[in-house]
Length: 381
Image (cartoon, rainbow, N blue to C red; front, side, top):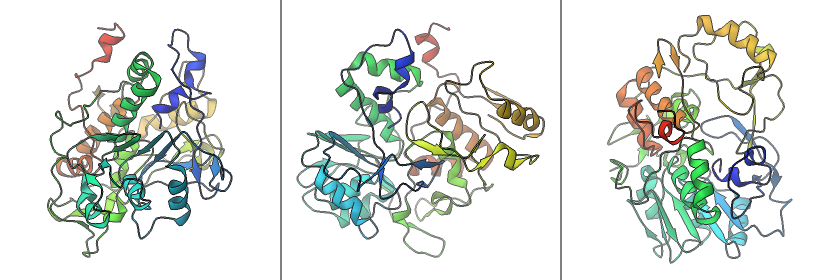
C-alpha cells in the first residue's frame, strides 16, 4: 500500500516537480470494523480511515486484503468476510498479501483461480480451502485475471510494484521505485533461494499447539517489522518451526513509537499511525536502540525542537542507532531499511534467528552494503 499510495490524490508527487503523471490516481480508504487503532503483529498501530458500515453500498475499484492473525477461516471476522464477498465480484482488481489469500479463498473469490500465499502456512492453507483453487507454491506473486495474490509479507512490495506498472505506467512506477530505493524481484522467484520450498510441518508453539494462524503480518515492511520478530509481544517472537526449528532470539525487544503528541501521524505514504508515547513522557529514559525514519521533514531546520532535544539527549548513550560506523547504522532509501534491518537483526540476534525471521516474512535481502544500484540512477557514483 505504501508504494501504491504514491499515486494517491494527496500524495508526495503533488509537491515534486519533474515527476511524470500517473495514468490513474488513487483515492485510498483503510477500512476496518471500527475506528479504533489496529495493532499489527509488527510495527506501529495504524488508524482506519472508515468503517465497513460507513462504506456500505459503495463499490471499490480495487480491494487489497492483508494477512495476519485474523485471516484463518475459524477466526476471520464475519464483517470482513461479508465485505470481501460483496466487493470482489464488481471490483476491477482484487489483491491480497501473505495469508490475505486465505480470506479470499474462504469467501469463494479464488474458486477456479491460480493463487499463492505465505509458504510457512501453505500446507495448512491448501488443506483447508476449496479444491477448485490452484495453489502455486513457487511464485513471488500470481496474477489470474483481476486477481493478484502475493506470497509472504515482503512479497507484497514486489507485487505492489508490478501492479503499479500495470495501472500507472512504467515511467511513473520507475520513478517511485527509484525514490524508495526498491530493488525489483521477478515474479517466478528465479532469483529467490528458499521460499518455494514448503515447510515440512506446521508451525507449533513451545507447548506443541498449532499456531499457524499467528503468521506475522503488517502493512508496512520496513526495518521495524523485521526487528520486531524478536519483540516480546510479537507473534513471530514465539515461533518455533519443527523442521526447520525457529530459534529463540538472543535479545527481546520492548519497542516504543515516539512523537511530540499522541495525535495520529500522516506519513508520506500509507495509513496514519499512532505513537505509543510522547518525547515528554519518556523523559530522561535512556534507550538502547533508536531508529530515525526519513521523510519530508528531515532537512536541516525542519525537524521539531522536541525531536532534536530527544536525539541530543539519547545519542551519547545509545548502544546502536542505525554503512555501519561503530554504533551508528544509517539506511539509504525507504526500502533499503529492510536490508539494514535484517543485517542489524543478524548482528544482534545471530544468523540462525535472523534467517528464520527472514524466511517467515519471505524477505528477499540485499546482503551486501555495496550492492546499491541507485547511486548510479541519481548520478552519485
